[in-house]
Length: 254
Picture 1 (spheres, rainbow, N blue to C red):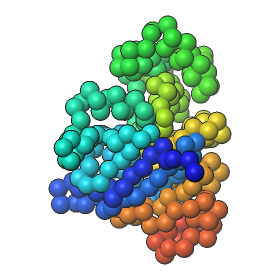
Picture 2: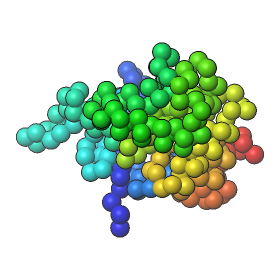
Picture 3: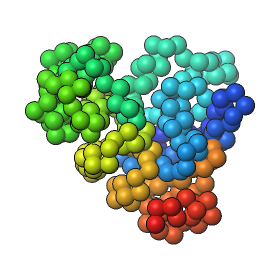
Picture 4: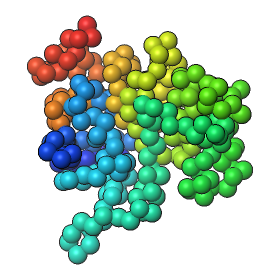
């Protein structure tokens, strides 16, 4: 049996008195596409941010590609890793946010090569060659020298996807990547994501796009109240959910 590329065990996270994650267990296999659904406040985005160490966890652990994220074991105790080591670990994970987070003063090409060259010390010529290929993959070759302000929201999000791919991550994390887009622009971003899924990339996608979950995901995970309530194949969870909370949530989309 293939070892998981990601393992989360007994994951807890609180903000003050608000316990957001209450013991999340989840494995993701290499090349698997996992769609995470759930109402606002269920802990979906917090879970993603814990995976790439944008948030500290209070209890439990996360492993990516066999390496514990954020901590190492010393003398029988977990000790937080220094920032440089965490930055290296983040190189295993590409993340696409709700807001595009592009540098407005940089062109499309400059945005995509920034992390490989500036953080991961990739040769600039090599980074440019890879960036051109990725920008072509998301259908924006003609926008290489455009600035973010000259692009539509959908185009900016596709640049953000190319940027996430540029570090050659083991796993791609998407945090509601279409929620900031006008409805007519959602389709172009989802099409890009479907294409990536068909290429065998490992993806965890927090989304409210039921159609994407049905068509592109290998597994659907439903979260509510800081717990994983139900998970399984899309045709099972989306068509015949077993838990009352999943049923109530999905009834809004029927």
